[in-house]
Length: 216
Image (cartoon, rainbow, N blue to C red; front, side, top):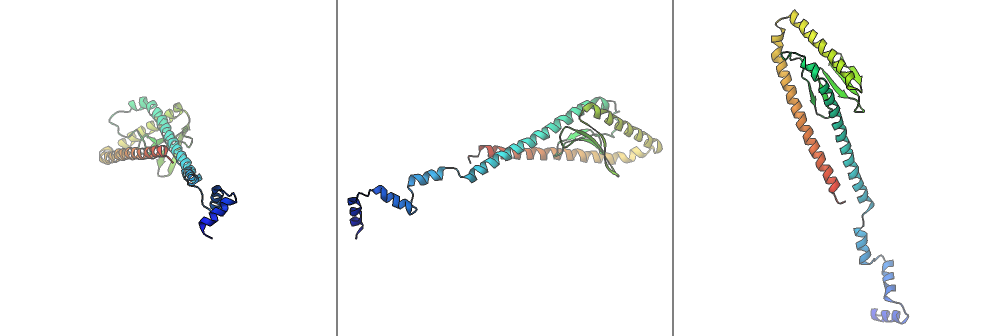
């Protein structure tokens, strides 16, 4: 029996073309409109990727906010130390106070001592490095508690310097060039750290912007 005869028989029996569409659907053929709608709808994977991008952007913002909070608290302490270092004679170059803005911000007092923030980003930790290792000179959540500890440290360094010069008057001349090179290298290293931090922050901002603006 030909296709036309078969179609005529179906028409005589009252079977409509919609039934034929149902037969086509049974064999896996779906209408074009339904297929287009499925293609336009977002899949669970796309939704999960979008959510992951949003979470990554939020984590980046949190990290940046924490680092900014560390720097702000160290700057407060640095300002509180200004009267102390104003009393140090300018010809004494024992100290090289400044804030390094690397991955872990620090307020340097000299080449051996610095102040860093604790894990909670609120606790001041005054640390000293020596041949015997690192030790904590003071810890506190308050700036007024750290200032006396730094004052004591500065006073001891000044006394040590005076005793060393009294024991060896030529000591200052011998170490001046070495210390000058050391401090130049430290300033150069800080400059590189600032540039690297700015580059990383810029890249993170671009990724965050791309994640937020991404359509899917």
